[in-house]
Image (cartoon, rainbow, N blue to C red):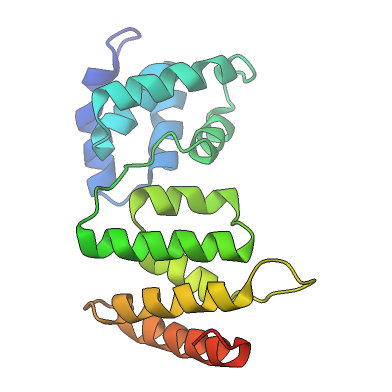
Length: 189
């Protein structure tokens, strides 16, 4: 590709790379190193993932000022920054059932005293099982948060998740067992 052909020319290639198993970060870094058009490459990866064009363009406008901080040859670092800024997140619309689970996980996060910012992408992309399993390993220290509220919300979320089929169902059930035990221990039943 010659410089200036734009993001649209890169989208089919980015889709092929996704289909071949490369992740968004690798795809951006490879395309950006080859073309030197970081903005076009970021936009192409977003579009290939299924991010609506207006959302992708808005994300790009927010990210472009950071490009000035980097030089040619630092495409992998730029890719990492874009991933940390959730450039390539595909927001997932959830059905009512999954909305209920996400709401319960949000309640649990509040009762926990918050969550690492890195989980925001999981909330946005609907990675409910990942969030549940992460939170199910929570240990409360120093009197922070509200363990009874946390474990009550987690138990209900786990029961809803355990009712779904999936390859990680056994992990969910094990997490639910932990949540139930913690809820009983804190009087959150």
